[in-house]
Amino acid sequence: MNRIRHLLVAAAGVLAVACAPTPVVATGVLAGLAQSDAMTIHALYPYLVRNEDGQPVDDDSETFHGYRILGSADVDDPSRRDLLVRLVERGIEDSDGRVAACFNPRHGLSIVVDGQVTDLVICFECHSMSVYEDGVEVAGHLTARGLAPQVTALFEEAGLTIHRDEEDEE
Image (cartoon, rainbow, N blue to C red; front, side):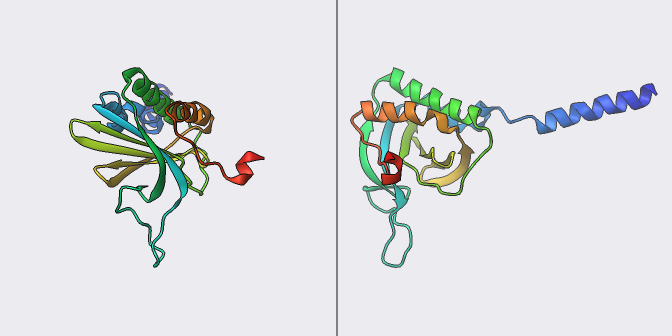
């Protein structure tokens, strides 16, 4: 009987470790955010810019990973950069795992650490974000929608306007 109990306890321990969520900081992306040399935030038009063939366009300074930039601002104040980092981290930590299929991002962050550029394209509507390193998509994360007002307030404080659809106004 003791042998069975020990096997069950061992199996439960293995399952607990295997099923435990990966620590947020372990992604490397978030760890880098905390040590940023520079940060630029972008208010985005939430629909992909497409060429005449219907292909996404992202080859000019007016788009951010295929989304038209409505406005940009450098975040020079280290306390503001830190606050944005903490909000992004909290969004990932607070995610309940729900996601929709829209991906209509309105918030973009571009972070430089030791010459490497990491970009976050965030859609609070569907609770997800795409992560790019030096222009290449490397990861995606889920986020909590509840942080959108705080992030939006920081963007607006920097003089940016977040696009709102007509149905958003109702």
